[in-house]
Length: 231
Image 1 (cartoon, rainbow, N blue to C red):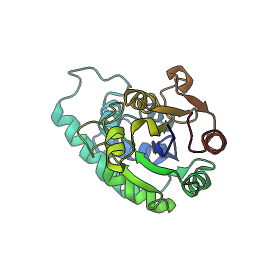
Image 2: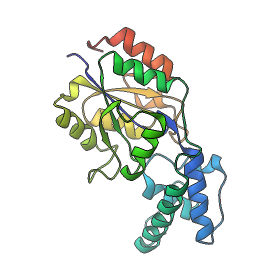
Image 3: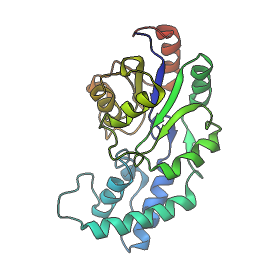
Image 4: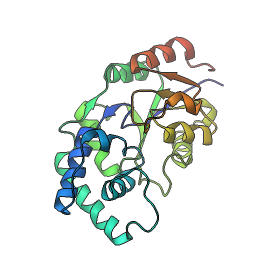
Protein backbone atom coordinates (compact mmCIF):
# COMPACT_ATOMS: atom_id res chain seq x y z
CA UNK A 1 0.00 0.00 0.00
CA UNK A 2 1.44 3.37 -0.99
CA UNK A 3 2.07 5.97 1.71
CA UNK A 4 0.27 9.27 1.14
CA UNK A 5 -0.23 10.88 4.54
CA UNK A 6 2.41 12.00 7.04
CA UNK A 7 0.95 12.87 10.44
CA UNK A 8 3.28 14.93 12.63
CA UNK A 9 3.37 15.63 16.31
CA UNK A 10 4.19 19.27 17.15
CA UNK A 11 6.02 19.95 20.44
CA UNK A 12 9.27 18.01 20.66
CA UNK A 13 9.02 16.92 17.02
CA UNK A 14 8.79 20.09 14.93
CA UNK A 15 9.26 22.76 17.59
CA UNK A 16 11.03 23.18 20.92
CA UNK A 17 8.38 25.00 22.95
CA UNK A 18 9.67 24.13 26.41
CA UNK A 19 11.18 27.58 27.12
CA UNK A 20 7.77 29.23 26.62
CA UNK A 21 5.92 26.48 28.46
CA UNK A 22 8.35 26.71 31.38
CA UNK A 23 7.87 30.47 31.60
CA UNK A 24 4.10 30.01 31.64
CA UNK A 25 4.28 27.25 34.24
CA UNK A 26 6.47 29.35 36.51
CA UNK A 27 4.24 32.40 36.02
CA UNK A 28 1.29 30.24 37.09
CA UNK A 29 3.15 28.94 40.14
CA UNK A 30 4.19 32.46 41.13
CA UNK A 31 0.59 33.66 40.84
CA UNK A 32 -0.48 30.78 43.07
CA UNK A 33 2.24 31.50 45.61
CA UNK A 34 4.16 28.31 44.92
CA UNK A 35 7.84 27.61 44.30
CA UNK A 36 9.01 27.64 40.69
CA UNK A 37 11.11 25.02 38.89
CA UNK A 38 14.10 25.05 36.50
CA UNK A 39 13.44 24.44 32.82
CA UNK A 40 15.31 21.12 33.02
CA UNK A 41 12.67 19.81 35.43
CA UNK A 42 9.67 21.18 33.54
CA UNK A 43 10.98 19.68 30.29
CA UNK A 44 10.28 16.21 31.69
CA UNK A 45 6.64 17.11 32.38
CA UNK A 46 5.77 18.14 28.80
CA UNK A 47 4.00 15.93 26.26
CA UNK A 48 0.70 14.81 27.76
CA UNK A 49 -1.26 18.00 27.28
CA UNK A 50 -1.74 21.12 29.38
CA UNK A 51 -3.81 19.58 32.16
CA UNK A 52 -1.23 17.01 33.18
CA UNK A 53 1.58 19.57 32.81
CA UNK A 54 -0.24 21.85 35.24
CA UNK A 55 -0.96 19.02 37.68
CA UNK A 56 2.68 17.90 37.61
CA UNK A 57 3.84 21.44 38.34
CA UNK A 58 1.39 21.77 41.23
CA UNK A 59 2.66 18.61 42.94
CA UNK A 60 6.26 19.02 41.77
CA UNK A 61 6.69 15.58 40.21
CA UNK A 62 5.86 13.60 37.10
CA UNK A 63 3.54 11.08 38.79
CA UNK A 64 0.38 12.70 40.12
CA UNK A 65 -1.42 10.48 42.59
CA UNK A 66 -5.19 10.39 42.90
CA UNK A 67 -6.36 12.69 45.64
CA UNK A 68 -3.31 14.98 45.61
CA UNK A 69 -5.29 17.73 43.87
CA UNK A 70 -8.94 18.63 43.77
CA UNK A 71 -10.63 19.21 40.43
CA UNK A 72 -11.24 22.81 41.46
CA UNK A 73 -7.55 23.39 42.23
CA UNK A 74 -6.46 21.95 38.89
CA UNK A 75 -9.18 23.80 36.96
CA UNK A 76 -8.19 27.15 38.41
CA UNK A 77 -4.46 26.56 37.95
CA UNK A 78 -4.98 25.52 34.34
CA UNK A 79 -6.84 28.74 33.57
CA UNK A 80 -4.00 30.74 35.17
CA UNK A 81 -1.54 28.78 33.03
CA UNK A 82 -3.57 29.41 29.85
CA UNK A 83 -3.62 33.15 30.56
CA UNK A 84 0.14 33.22 31.10
CA UNK A 85 0.89 31.10 28.02
CA UNK A 86 -1.33 33.25 25.83
CA UNK A 87 0.75 36.29 26.74
CA UNK A 88 4.14 34.70 26.01
CA UNK A 89 3.34 31.90 23.54
CA UNK A 90 5.84 31.87 20.70
CA UNK A 91 8.37 34.33 22.05
CA UNK A 92 11.00 31.64 22.74
CA UNK A 93 9.62 28.74 20.70
CA UNK A 94 11.96 27.64 17.90
CA UNK A 95 11.83 25.08 15.11
CA UNK A 96 14.27 22.20 15.36
CA UNK A 97 17.09 22.18 12.78
CA UNK A 98 16.02 21.38 9.20
CA UNK A 99 12.31 21.17 10.07
CA UNK A 100 11.26 24.16 7.98
CA UNK A 101 13.07 23.00 4.84
CA UNK A 102 12.16 19.37 5.51
CA UNK A 103 8.43 19.99 5.74
CA UNK A 104 8.52 22.00 2.53
CA UNK A 105 10.44 19.23 0.74
CA UNK A 106 7.89 16.62 1.81
CA UNK A 107 4.99 18.86 0.84
CA UNK A 108 6.56 19.58 -2.55
CA UNK A 109 7.14 15.85 -3.07
CA UNK A 110 3.39 15.35 -2.99
CA UNK A 111 2.80 14.02 0.51
CA UNK A 112 -0.27 15.17 2.41
CA UNK A 113 0.82 16.56 5.78
CA UNK A 114 -1.28 16.68 8.94
CA UNK A 115 -0.59 17.85 12.49
CA UNK A 116 -1.89 16.07 15.60
CA UNK A 117 -0.74 17.57 18.88
CA UNK A 118 -1.81 17.30 22.52
CA UNK A 119 -1.37 21.08 22.83
CA UNK A 120 -4.71 22.90 23.23
CA UNK A 121 -5.86 23.89 19.76
CA UNK A 122 -6.28 27.56 20.70
CA UNK A 123 -2.49 27.99 20.81
CA UNK A 124 -1.64 26.14 17.59
CA UNK A 125 -2.59 28.56 14.74
CA UNK A 126 -0.48 31.43 16.11
CA UNK A 127 2.62 29.23 16.30
CA UNK A 128 2.04 27.76 12.84
CA UNK A 129 1.68 31.24 11.40
CA UNK A 130 4.85 32.42 13.12
CA UNK A 131 6.80 29.85 11.11
CA UNK A 132 4.76 30.26 7.92
CA UNK A 133 3.53 26.67 8.08
CA UNK A 134 -0.22 27.30 8.13
CA UNK A 135 -0.66 26.21 4.51
CA UNK A 136 1.47 23.05 4.73
CA UNK A 137 -0.97 20.99 6.79
CA UNK A 138 -4.23 19.70 5.36
CA UNK A 139 -5.60 18.88 8.82
CA UNK A 140 -4.67 20.19 12.29
CA UNK A 141 -5.95 18.74 15.57
CA UNK A 142 -5.18 19.85 19.11
CA UNK A 143 -5.42 17.92 22.34
CA UNK A 144 -8.92 19.22 22.97
CA UNK A 145 -10.23 19.01 19.39
CA UNK A 146 -11.75 15.59 20.17
CA UNK A 147 -12.78 13.90 23.43
CA UNK A 148 -9.67 11.68 23.13
CA UNK A 149 -6.03 12.59 22.60
CA UNK A 150 -2.83 10.63 21.95
CA UNK A 151 -1.94 7.87 22.78
CA UNK A 152 -5.58 7.11 21.92
CA UNK A 153 -5.70 6.46 18.15
CA UNK A 154 -8.91 8.47 17.69
CA UNK A 155 -7.25 11.72 16.49
CA UNK A 156 -5.15 9.84 13.93
CA UNK A 157 -8.14 7.90 12.67
CA UNK A 158 -10.19 11.09 12.50
CA UNK A 159 -7.54 12.70 10.29
CA UNK A 160 -7.47 9.67 8.01
CA UNK A 161 -11.24 9.66 7.69
CA UNK A 162 -11.39 13.42 7.11
CA UNK A 163 -8.79 13.22 4.34
CA UNK A 164 -10.21 9.98 2.93
CA UNK A 165 -6.90 8.15 3.40
CA UNK A 166 -6.75 4.73 5.04
CA UNK A 167 -4.50 4.17 8.08
CA UNK A 168 -2.26 1.81 6.13
CA UNK A 169 -1.52 4.71 3.77
CA UNK A 170 -0.47 6.93 6.69
CA UNK A 171 2.56 7.29 8.95
CA UNK A 172 2.66 8.81 12.44
CA UNK A 173 5.82 10.79 13.17
CA UNK A 174 6.74 11.93 16.67
CA UNK A 175 9.17 12.11 19.55
CA UNK A 176 7.32 10.46 22.43
CA UNK A 177 5.57 7.31 23.55
CA UNK A 178 2.21 9.07 23.02
CA UNK A 179 2.96 9.41 19.31
CA UNK A 180 4.32 5.92 18.74
CA UNK A 181 1.58 4.23 20.76
CA UNK A 182 -1.11 6.29 19.00
CA UNK A 183 0.24 5.20 15.63
CA UNK A 184 0.55 1.58 16.68
CA UNK A 185 -2.98 1.67 18.14
CA UNK A 186 -4.22 3.08 14.83
CA UNK A 187 -2.48 0.23 12.98
CA UNK A 188 -0.24 2.57 11.02
CA UNK A 189 3.53 2.74 10.60
CA UNK A 190 5.46 5.01 12.95
CA UNK A 191 8.67 7.02 12.68
CA UNK A 192 10.36 8.13 15.90
CA UNK A 193 12.66 11.08 16.59
CA UNK A 194 15.06 10.77 19.50
CA UNK A 195 15.66 14.43 20.35
CA UNK A 196 12.29 15.50 21.79
CA UNK A 197 10.34 15.06 25.01
CA UNK A 198 10.06 11.41 25.96
CA UNK A 199 10.58 11.44 29.74
CA UNK A 200 14.12 10.12 29.43
CA UNK A 201 13.12 7.00 27.52
CA UNK A 202 14.85 6.12 24.25
CA UNK A 203 12.22 6.32 21.51
CA UNK A 204 13.64 3.12 20.02
CA UNK A 205 12.44 1.15 23.06
CA UNK A 206 8.89 1.69 21.79
CA UNK A 207 9.66 -0.16 18.55
CA UNK A 208 8.71 2.41 15.93
CA UNK A 209 8.97 1.27 12.34
CA UNK A 210 12.13 3.40 12.03
CA UNK A 211 13.86 5.94 14.30
CA UNK A 212 16.11 8.92 13.60
CA UNK A 213 18.31 11.29 15.58
CA UNK A 214 17.57 14.38 13.51
CA UNK A 215 14.85 15.68 11.22
CA UNK A 216 17.05 15.91 8.13
CA UNK A 217 17.79 12.18 8.34
CA UNK A 218 14.08 11.42 8.65
CA UNK A 219 13.23 13.50 5.60
CA UNK A 220 16.04 12.00 3.55
CA UNK A 221 14.89 8.50 4.47
CA UNK A 222 11.29 9.22 3.53
CA UNK A 223 12.24 10.72 0.18
CA UNK A 224 14.73 7.95 -0.63
CA UNK A 225 13.02 4.90 0.85
CA UNK A 226 9.31 5.55 0.59
CA UNK A 227 8.80 7.42 -2.67
CA UNK A 228 5.08 6.97 -1.96
CA UNK A 229 5.52 3.19 -1.80
CA UNK A 230 5.51 0.60 0.93
CA UNK A 231 7.78 0.81 3.96
